[in-house]
Image 1: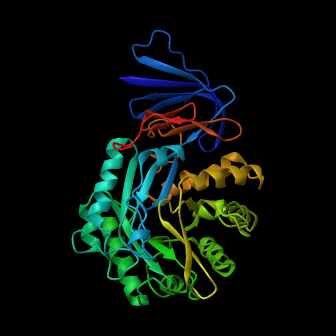
Image 2: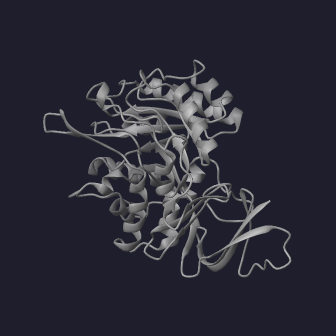
Image 3: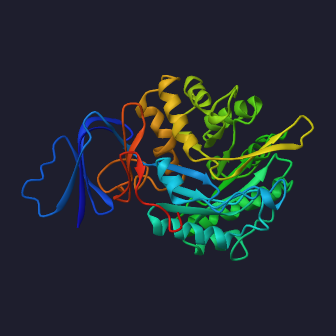
Length: 388
């Protein structure tokens, strides 16, 4: 059986473990110890000297448009499908695929097929049923059946407080959350409601109303894009302090002249006493990023990239002064707990999946392992998608 021994790396699991050896056998981590000898081993072991390097869990991205998104300015503005090398280059080893504005020319069937393909190529994938619209687009005809009977479906996506959403009612959103919750309980999945938030004036009000006036627990909802406006972010911090989970989108870290970067928002969460285990980061990768003028018309379009999350991590440590072991949680263990895959994912410990990054002290990603398979070496992607 294939085995790899990473020696003498500084391990953040994400907690700081100091200099350790990490042994991977097959797709899992076998052990992490100060010294792991290999003399006399019957295994064929590849040894990697990581002295002076950081060894951290692979990043988890819970919001990726793996079959593309967009379309807001016509058919030519539909963004392309994701390719494997873009995932590996970003240090991501687990992703959740979803639909966006377009639930007409994009389908859950295609989303599922793409997720299966990416998994065959080497990473771990999940998907959400639904899109912006209500009633939800599904594969089986219902949210409950999709979550219960389709292996990769772990929750449902919906949009609120956005001029592109379906203007669903409180009752419709509550019913959706109830269906997802029960389906998750019956199938052993999170059954989460992943909520796209726009810049609308209602912000999180509908979710807060449901939490306050029904028995649906607050952690059933995972609102994302919560830093679109200062007012929304202030409400989101309160939501997280109440026990809710909030997701910060990383793409604006790349926007020149951005007044409020995700790395700054994360540092603010720490400073304001927001429970950091309730805060995560995702990229909105491969989705369209429309730019609007003052009249609300789209005047430009870009595409989200998964790499933005890695940049947020770098800036969080280097510019905001957040400890490495704390910063990494937003991209690894916190996300894994939201997706109910911890400690299989999101940490480095015995029996966890061997999803591992080796970084230099400037936080440049040098090596990527996904389920024990080396996907990047010396900063170059060595495993690519079928048609790359």
